Image 1 (spheres, rainbow, N blue to C red):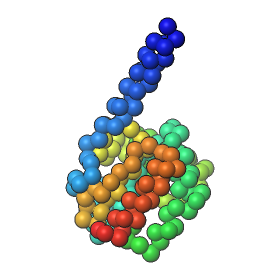
Image 2: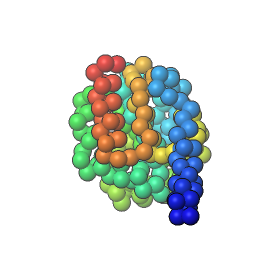
Image 3: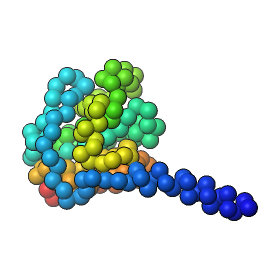
Length: 169
């Protein structure tokens, strides 16, 4: 009986995880043009970023893995290694109000570009669900890879993909 309960529990846990992998845009796909309202009030147009490698991260303040990932990026100065490179990192908050995101980012000390996607229209271009999710986009506007989830190993994969894209694209 214990074995059956364990199997059923494991099966139930796997359902949401498999649904989280539903990706709409994938490696090799061109990213369409759209505008990102930034936390500082400016607007970034994706087509204006052509010629740069872009890491587009989707996150939310309520997502513990998202927060751990962004804390790690901040704490270990991960983005500083790309200073002077044609590289842009934008963390797009999924589905939250500007004030919520602003207060959270201030409290955490985040100093990178933060975009807002309160309606989740931008996120829905890329995926149906599942965060944290970071896409690496080449200078030509084509996705060179993405990482879904957060562990130190996955962050290492993301950094390696950014490095590779900066060298080859």
